[in-house]
Image 1 (cartoon, rainbow, N blue to C red):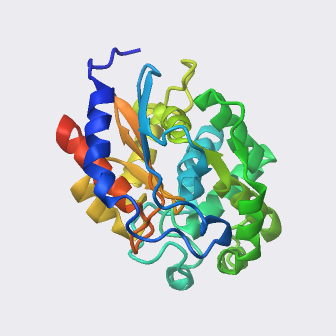
Image 2: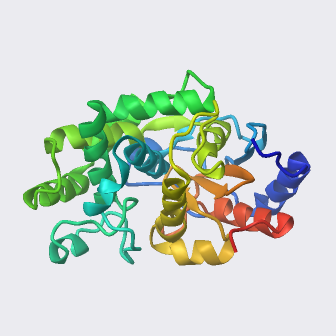
Length: 309
């Protein structure tokens, strides 16, 4: 394994946290999932894991939170690992330009979602993972436990139930795609596993370690290969162009890294060949991205001079 450049990560993270602190609490916590509406908006944590598995963090970096759409990056990687690139016949790689739960494009694009990170695309990926493994939710949970080294990573049943109870839009997306033949499993099965994946609870520490295979060009924490370098590049590329909803252009402009956000307030970002980062602050902007989290990642790349550009 390549030796990472010696950096005082702890000092950098302290500086980043101090920079982001005035923005913590700004924005609004996710309201459309009632189980997330009561999360304390004043929480903030950030962690970095280098390619050798060394991890550092500050603030609430070991506090678990709901990963939500961050899970979509892992489900895509697992589908590529299990079934290769056939998934791209069923979902595109282009930014949508519309909200993450939009129905609009599906109708005039014949049930093919624009990318795997909008909800429609993630449902197709979950469907494929279910077909490949027989249990999409458990497959992801076991992977995340192994990569993070934390056997306590688990689904939050309250969040999963809340999502299911208020999941009419996702059900509509799934039924619409099923009408075009773009789901192989029953809609109820796909939705169940999708809601479970989004309801996984992990800390910044856990997520930074779990996503480190993307910084290692597809190599897992135990040294085995999950993805060929080509497919790891694909995941990173789609994260860069589509990973922060319809604010991906702004995120690329400010941060300059592949990233995947979730409405739980977390963002995972990848610096290929160096490290992965995870930041958590529940206050969201109008696009569903953490206000303080984006600012923290922006400052990290400014301080270190590291980006993909």
